[in-house]
Image (cartoon, rainbow, N blue to C red):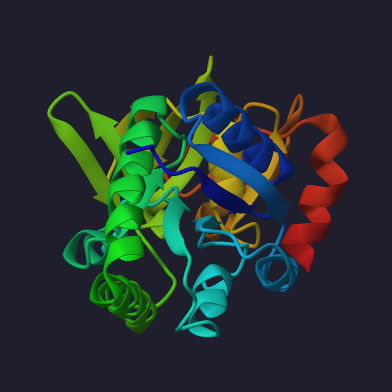
Length: 260
């Protein structure tokens, strides 16, 4: 039997994320034919009606934290399958597991993407051959969406380490600094963790009202700011005593943000 070719729609508010996923699918998943992209739920809804895709790759945080889920809630009987794309190892991932719904974590690993597509292909075959399987999938998907929304839209993040990963809530970060292509996170309990994700990835993930880019190498939690100093440069002094440099070109935006 020939392997089915799935017609996919990519839904993510970040253009670079959409293009990166498109290239990864082209390189490693030839069974997926990307028929369109959308930068939010409104465009996605129109595209779904026009293109009738078999599969959605859906970022659930665009950018409010629930827009991707709102889209699915508006289409409880849709025939397409969904592979969620998320940067968060939190209750959402637990909901995906418990309801057998597929997902990949950002930054996307090619092997994980391949595995998710393989699962989608197998399930698509079952759904094509058995009406009950299609209804079972829709029930699983709708239950996962309900579970995630019931827990709210303030997920925990995760940093991998040698023996597993550390889960934490964003408000426990004091500041973040670039370390090459990695990011060093400083926490309120005094711990520090090095993550392989870049500072730009964290800037995109975190709430821009709470986390401010003050330097090309530094991102601060404004709730942890204690003082601003002009002392042979410009500095954000954090509650743990750390002095974080503020780039000259970002000083005005920083001061305006802090003074409201």
